[in-house]
Amino acid sequence: MVKSCIPKEGQSIKIQSYKHDGNIHRVWSETLILKGTEDVIIGGNDHTLVTESDGRTWITREPAIVYFHSQYWFNVICMFREDGVYYYCNLSSPFACDEEALKYIDYDLDIKVYPNGKYHLLDEDEYVQHMNQMNYPKDIDLILRRSVDILQQWIEQKKGPFAPDFIKVWRDRFHKLRTK
Image (cartoon, rainbow, N blue to C red; front, side):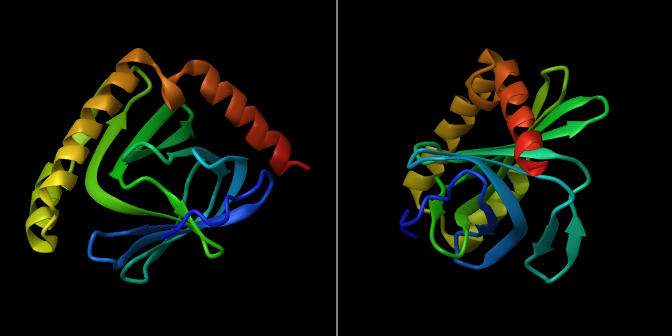
């Protein structure tokens, strides 16, 4: 996967998540690009069709801002619910883009952050199972473990997508671009 075409602001793209073995994991049918650079892609979606690897589909329930970075092994989904902002953080490869979609490899581990700032590491059993099944290299395991630490620091320091002004700026931008 080569970063051959960075999506432009206002463009609608697909997001494709893969597993380490190259199989498709999940596809979001459309995300509106709010910012696209070589390093960072920020998008927004709401009531978006999601297709799972087994063909099942579902629709996202609330507006969300998605954050991808080319230098970090995680991405962040900021979901706006009635009781506040929830974050779902996927430990993953850095993003890549092509004409088809924004793409990344999902490495099972997730961190869920609640509106009160508390967070939990999820899916450790699934990670160990897939690491053994798909033979994740030791260096990938080390990178992902280090990335969990970085992500926890960002959460605790309210850095990047966890900063209160991030949410306000990008939620407002999403609303403006959607209503154009």
